[in-house]
Image (tube, rainbow, N blue to C red; front, top):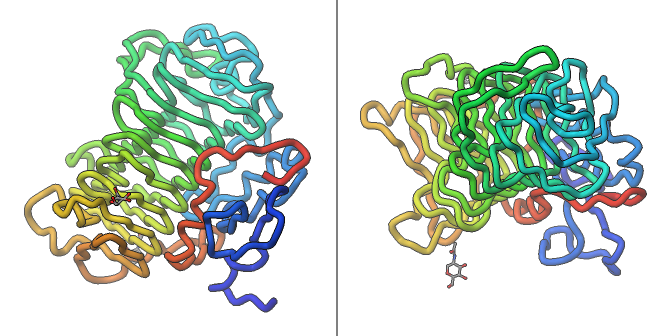
Length: 383
Ligand SMILES: *[C@@H]1O[C@H](CO)[C@@H](O)[C@H](O)[C@H]1NC(C)=O
Ligand SMILES: *[C@@H]1O[C@H](CO)[C@@H](O)[C@H](O)[C@H]1NC(C)=O
């Protein structure tokens, strides 16, 4: 079939799972047949995924596209779910993530990892949960601080707690005294080239994913968010103007039931919020303060039933709100949802050729976000 750029996402991306007996309407999502979005298309149909794991590193789109994670490193297999924040044992996740050389980290078996303090990641790491059921839960969770090139794929992060002050190792040669974390699922601080894909995040003490302190070049895709108050904060304070450099792509995520606000909330930076599915919210979906620029494109917004909360948008400040550039393009609004735009001039992400992708029509979003969250991947079969 001839493809024009705008039809790229439709070309041969229909994956029939083993138990789907008949080809089913590609636009339907209440079946075993899924339409793949243009991240998943890049790798999911390959039944050899387990021997080609690093192919995933080439599949991001948007601002986090250049994130290579551990692409040029060895495979490291986590065998031991235990944790020692100061002297991590070989075989544990913490031992792997603090190393200085690039590593592509995988898991030998299903495991629940209850961390005793923040997991402080070093640069050039991929955490790849494919083929195992990996949970980081009921303790402090992940900190990505002053590093670059991190990919986190296919893990479940829930019930994250604040950590107590204490010593935590951040590299083989450095143990630092930490003041205690807030209880985020994933905290991204002064870091760049980060890609978070196909994770499940719920019920943390603070944010599910927070991006702060001049972090940029980030893609947050294919994640399943549920049961949480403050979902995603882009910019920690309204005084920290270095956050103006922040560019984040939020794409193909499912903002599922039990969420209250911040999907995302942006302070100074730029957010391209595209092809996400919102299953209601309690207060609002997209918020901001400090003059952020937001392009909402091809999302599928289902408003909550409460007639007081139908507005997608919320501006958290008084003043010149009308000049803030907030644009909605080809979004679908259901159950009375509405977006209040503002500002004038271009809101375009100005992606490089490599980062660029064409948004799917909003009507396809239920199908292309149907497999948000970790996938069940069996060796020798397409995921
Ligand atoms: C709104 O109410 C309908 C009918 O009770 C229900 O099926 C639906 O899930 C509700 N929607 C949300 C977003 O809560
Ligand atoms: C893209 O360029 C336009 C025009 O210069 C600008 O208004 C917009 O803010 C830019 N987008 C980003 C993400 O910087």
